[in-house]
Image (cartoon, rainbow, N blue to C red; front, top):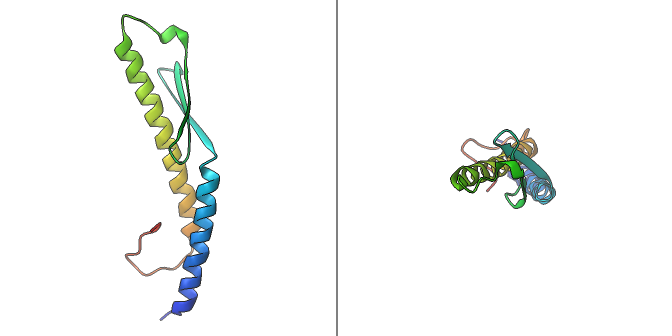
Length: 107
């Protein structure tokens, strides 16, 4: 049986690392484009939308619905890319920590 105090210390250290990593990733941006690059969205890894770029060629007053769909796809893709990066980086922090089965982190 492992030492509970040692495990608590490991968990506290991991929490500190996770908080630091989350703060760093909240500043890091990811981008995603839709419509062959006609629409691009930039978001932080914590899901904050930072920018949208729209190529004027895709703006068609007769087909606003397509433009709306492309914007949604670009924003959704950027936010998902940020979440994916956040998950990958958080998994690196918890890797190697031997926790009892069933403990899912982050808390």
